[in-house]
Image 1 (cartoon, rainbow, N blue to C red):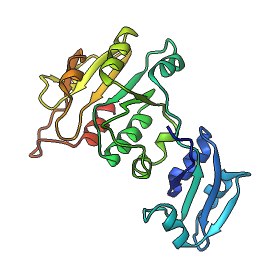
Image 2: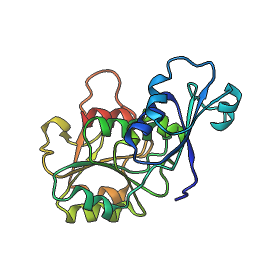
Image 3: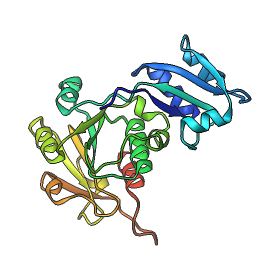
Image 4: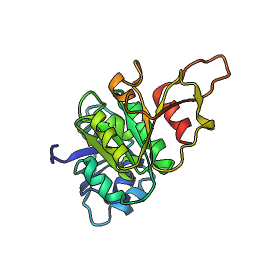
Length: 234
């Protein structure tokens, strides 16, 4: 992973990055004419604050949405599975496992739900997964600053390691026979969310101890990955 500083665009992502203090912030760029930026500027503390033009901010984020604020900071810290397991110790947390979630907005939205619902971490593979892009960070609305992000080279082996640490692995699947609300999901739990198109892959499925579904009774018969994860986590 590169240690090159990156841009954190948007008021809430920048504010939460400054508040969390999990990564070093270098400089805060603010639109000269922008109003209501006082909370972000206060959170910056001794970090240099530089007024700039809208064109300058636009160039920093390659035309993305910045709301008049861009923070230059170190990349988000990523943990490997062993380090994360050491951090959680003997507690009984739950984690969200993402199997090939490739849409950065879905990725960010799931991280946001996971952080809001008290998950101890979000586990995802190094390859064939959404990058930690500005779009993903913005969709998470600051949540990535407050939750452990765990990247693994092999998701199947990661689930095997979790099971050795007494985690139950539950797969979220539309066709499962067991309704989510009826399942006992207490104790150490890893909830697997499959990809937007093909769901949970075969090798990952083999590691699941049970499958659960969200009951849908209306005319809409499917939900996207981030909405499903949000409902399941709530």
